[in-house]
Length: 111
Image (cartoon, rainbow, N blue to C red; front, side, top):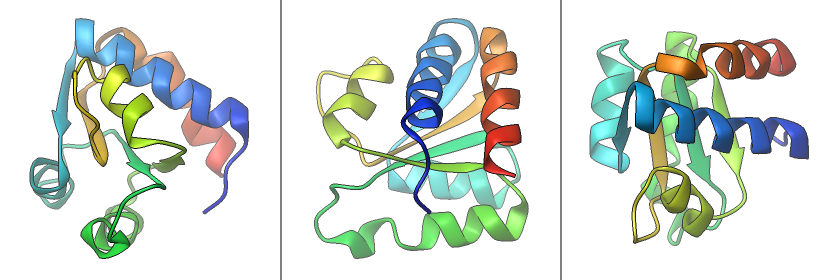
């Protein structure tokens, strides 16, 4: 599930835009629920999760539901992009807001 640096940067940008103009869900439980309900437009999962079993199911669920899933480098950067003061293992964009174009660019790049 390796993606280019540009796609990772675009994912951070999309999360930051959605945080201010749309709606996001943070954390494994909330993101899992959003995927299962088909609400997620884009999911970002951090690579440096310990133990990795915490988020192993998320890319599989995304694939099953046809939701784009991006693996980003760090929990810290993901938490910062989501507007948190603490690291987070995953974020889902529920309502795009101004991040619609960034999400489309990511989706096209992943195909």
